Image 1 (tube, rainbow, N blue to C red):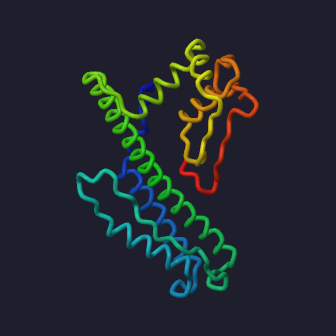
Image 2 (image 1 turned 30 degrees about the horizontal axis):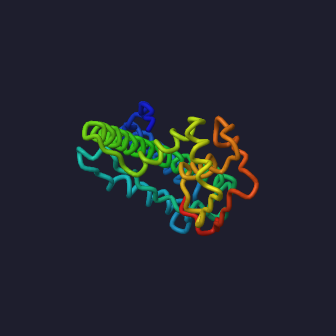
Image 3 (image 1 turned 30 degrees about the vertical axis):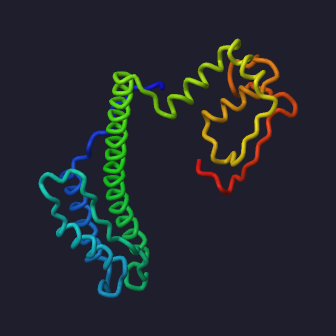
Length: 219
């Protein structure tokens, strides 16, 4: 198997910075609504803002919880223009709510990216440790056998020998055949060992027979 060095990942976003930015935006939005919204109790946009403010005040992650997602409560920016004076201020207010939502989504997306990369890094360390264990113990798993069989078939003398052993290559449930197995089947189906890459294989007429259903594919 070939292992690629795991690249450095994104930095963990600083929650305090986002909290300060959100608090400032919410404060500005409330001041805007106080000035231009004449019926705040009946305006869904203002209600969404107040709900977001309340959720942010109640947001108290544990000190060691570096992966808490910011709550997003702005579920409706549908206000009624008749609640605003002048009425075009309602659209300006909706724009401010959009800024708040974008900032929350930006932070949460960065947390997701960080967690995803951390999981990949962990898996990299795990698979590399697994590889080293197999080398140490002198064992092979099923994928190793496929990889070594595939690699062996790129030796043209070996491929010619095995091509001569099979008149037909029949593959059922092709939709569940993994790429390594496809590579082996194609290399065996050549008339002569000519291709240096499996995508360039031209199967011998009538040698390769495949049955599959894309709708049942697990890949």
